[in-house]
Length: 473
Image 1 (cartoon, helix red, strand yellow):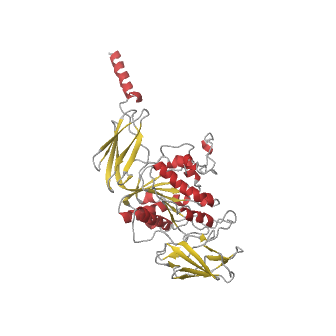
Image 2: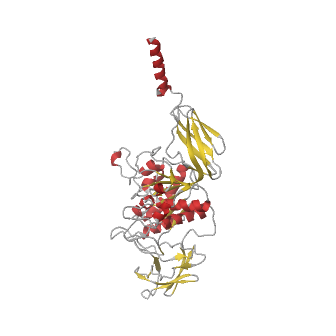
Image 3: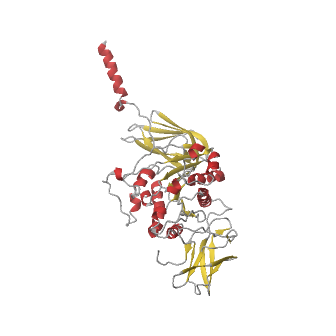
């Protein structure tokens, strides 16, 4: 009798051990979970781990279809699922013999939201640094059609497959902790498109652009020194090239998205020439990683701020961002009117989020009837001591909203700039200075800190700009 009991116990233990289990529980990265949003009307990827060599089935409730994939010898699997028009909630069941069901899944528009502290800044604000109107927006934020997920701040010398996080509902306590710029962007998309919106925030304050690009993506920029992969990871700086891509972008790369928004540049302000190339480079790198050749990247131009006596005038970085906006699939939201002299984090995050949304609505979703960009210099002509400027993106003209234009300067051949008298005319702007009889160059709002005063009549500001190419200083 004892021998029989011993045999039964031994067999039971063998079947309970991992090597004898018929199936292991399906495991997927954190980007897949309850409350997630899947990109509508496309084929979205699912991937994860299962029992080695098992057949994985994904069943979607919106059409009752099942999709299958064969796990490899290590249990890795991946497949694509067709998504319908926006709607929900739905369920997605994933099984290799033991099922995992993802609940409250919505179908809609998904955007990645990345950058440094101005993207990371939560709706509740930073310590002693508010977000304008945040209390009201947080209090009224409950919305079942917006979902939020934040990738935690992690570095890695090698690409990671996962992160710790979960999709959260759009409720006051969750919105308070979520990116303000991203939330305002998503809120406008939700209102205008009337579809669910999923926002993936992956940002880290104070970081440069190079850490957000993969090793392969940085090979085109020979001035960037790639990290030594043998260095100690506990001393790994988030400024090290590739390490934020590896830890905070790679785990979500391939998840179905419509596009990305970006708010970064302050930490690269002293290298504008390089940044003008790196920004389109980041967009191209992400397009390759997602396999989306026309993936749009809309970004916020850094706001005016007093950086102090050292370093380059940040207007040169803003100029680089303006020039980069002509690259395919890129668009720039200007916030020349919201900068704060003594705070690098402008409180008016709604302006940034809304203007990013205008870009997406017009350029990605094809909406019409409203503007998405501020005035951009088209042509300069000189007649005697007067300069005339015309602008694109101002079909209904220009305005200063009744204020005197005070941000223009004129220089002659001696390269000395003087404040200019400037007037809005039917055809643009006319300006002159009593101190410059033979003008050759004009600059607008070309300072570290300044409050822009030139807009199109739709209320979108002009970027700082210059007509010269004189040495940066």
